[in-house]
Each structure stands twice: as C-alpha cells, then as structure tokens.
Image 1 (cartoon, rainbow, N blue to C red):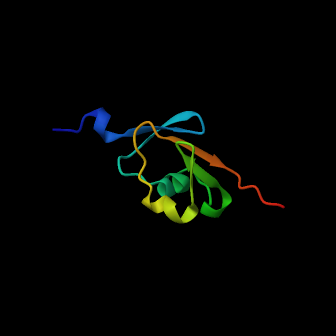
Image 2: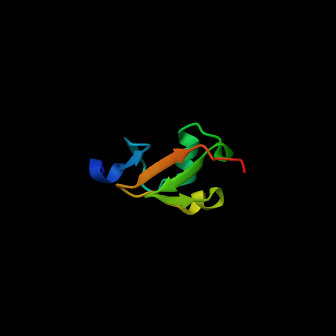
Image 3: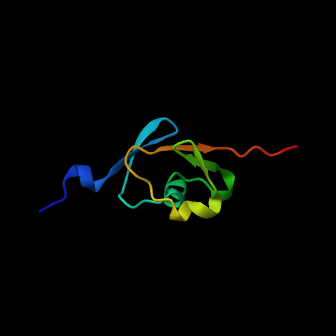
Length: 75
C-alpha cells in the first residue's frame, strides 16, 4: 500500500510561498535545499529566531511559517 499524499509531504510557508518538504526535514536541510550557504542567511520559524547552530535540531512541521533573511551587520 502506498502512502497517502497527506503523509508523504509536509506543506510549509517559506517567505510567504507554499513549499512541500519530506516529513522530518530540518531547517538546516531546507536552507541547503534552497541553495543558501548557512552563514549567508538568518532564519525564523513561526516568528521565532532560530540560531544557525540550532537549525539541525529544528524539525519542520505542517503549517510552519519559515522566514529566511539577510543578517543585519553594523553598529
């Protein structure tokens, strides 16, 4: 029996656009799949900042709102 479509992918919002990923995908994997160098972007999930070191532990879930943005440097 093949898996139903609802369990074969997880739908997220990435920068305001729907994107399907495999269940169990981490934020680090998503950043890589989108072609970004990890140090080149900052990330937030559901309006909560996720540090670069924590991305590998942050498993994405259906309905998560992911934001990728350029870090602001200066002073």
